[in-house]
Length: 613
Image (cartoon, rainbow, N blue to C red):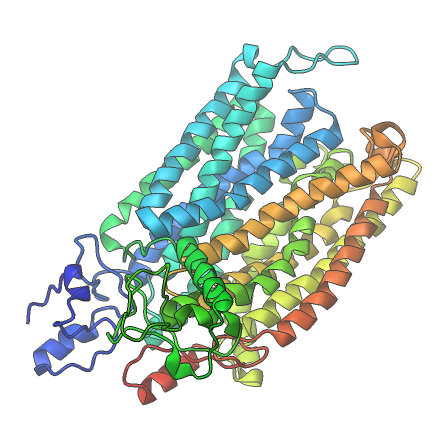
């Protein structure tokens, strides 16, 4: 047998396919070769089935992790500075600037749905990352030009009211920002899943390393954030806005170079077609059959192709589940003499189950959006508080306001290694779960901590506002709220990465990752909406709770509203997580990878993956 098995052979039905069952009759030498090949359908850069000895794993992951550090450095350097830039350079009011930054961040993360669609349907994850990184880079260049060319900004404010920016100046700036948002939308849903693709989940050693990758990927995000909100904010403060944006532009270019450098080491999943199209097909066929009076009486009536693989390119078959039985009508053969390949007329069980898997995660997704409203405060009102407090830590050393979120980033950098090295082994010894606690439990911990994060913010802001000299209070009074938000993020973000990747099917992993990320965008938009509602309901920017002058505002009241939202959301999440039924149909379950291999030993097809609570 040829050791270099080409990807084109994957769909040759006369060929015994090693990528899924590994039970074909072969001589001993061929078996040794097959054992080194991945079983998840990934190929190398030449189009051959990827070999574990030369591709993927920690040979490829460092390029992806360092790429994430560089890209996040650029994003956070812009994000933490943008409210100040809009207020002081573009002469916008504080509430308007906070709203515009929230809207921009919201767009960046909601656009992840577009990036995921293009990756799964047309380009694949690697090429999608490269294309949108280039778009991102162009946006960074335009942003740097906005800061460096005087005609692209209003004249310096010498007397109130300041001269506002013209429509052309505003349009140029927003054009740059939304190119960055578009680039972010294409990159973010693909990077984490592309990294996870480097680990074969049917290989016990690689599967365990995959979960370590998720933790170190989050570590990379925080490392990039730390550098962005310390080093680059310092550059901006000392050298001006031009240098403040030029350096992250160079970092973005470096991120592209770093990712391309690992080209020969990666494992690639080929595009599997549009999952959204398959979802619509299931809905259309099930509704049509329902109105025709079709009734599902037995599972054996449901249609599935007879080959080892499913009819979704590169995806494994999925077992039938009893949830959402209405959708099963899409797989009912209405004419036994005519089996059509038209998916608008008849769907397979796997296609129906793919849609069911997507529907299952929607309640979990919806019940974690409130957490993103809290995260939105990190780049808006938390920074505004820091800007008017005493930031001196030595007679000649002042912390830049934009660097205060370092408290959050340091938390992530310190807690991830501690969690991975000490907490996970301890919890594993108590619970027997491979990851110590399930991903749903980890998300729940993050949601619970977020309640106290906003409570702390409200109490500190009340104390600051009632102080006879509010500006004399040390910046370190803000440490608890930043630290607690960072703790909530460490638990919830990585838990969500694990959950949305594991509960996705082979053909929906980018979309599932994008769905998770989109909640960050929706949370930012909801934060903007709440700001506008509170502003208009309490008297506007002159007399309301949220004014241009924070010392005359009642920001603590706003924080109490968010605290209440987080508390109610946590209770809702508990109910939804308890009722959640995973792929095996058991309540409150999430994947435990240790069960995958036990199941594989007793299932000679190796197609289905086990789960345990």
